[in-house]
Image (cartoon, rainbow, N blue to C red; front, top):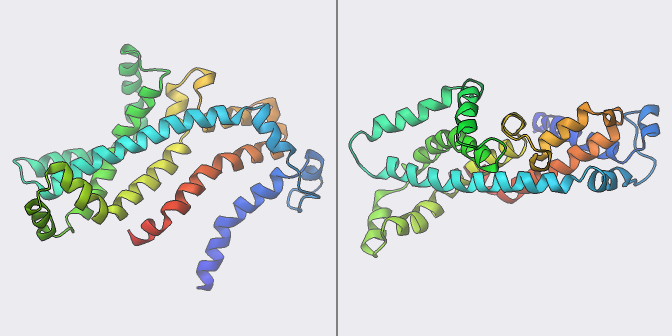
Length: 257
């Protein structure tokens, strides 16, 4: 227990440091980066909202991530149900082929994918980023959910069929409730991963008005504003809030899974 408490501190301290740093002035930070702030200063947050327009980048990120996670979840649930409970010729081969794509690094596929997207007009669009996330995330989600759905008793499925449940009825009334832990893990991990993703949006999105929050914050780090760490920390802290909310909402499912 003591070991876990110490480990928790190593995860919580960076968040604590971000909070106290974002409430300091530049002079306070230079005087002592690790000291507590002199007061409850919100000027950095006002600046990050008004001058940096962080909520515009939040909107862009939310559009991409919410649509991506929703599509990943729906497609993975349907595919996993087929692999776990439906018997069809070649199912094992198809499943292994899909899962094997997890071993291909995204950096290897990025150049050919960019060339294809450029030819069909998907560069600098939300659609291009969403499609790339689907290709990257679905194999892992399918592997996770297939393993979980195999643990659902076939008797429960048969009882639902006797009660008149069809294909979508089984998914809605049996698969989703009984496989909720695996689905929640997929939602949490994909949401956090793609909310914090820098690589893919930086490659595919060119317009400043379509940038995601991580790309915008990365540009902030490299700009002349980077001499003010308190301003940086306020932006990073604000960008952290959505992922914390998602984790807190789904944490009981994560522990159960």
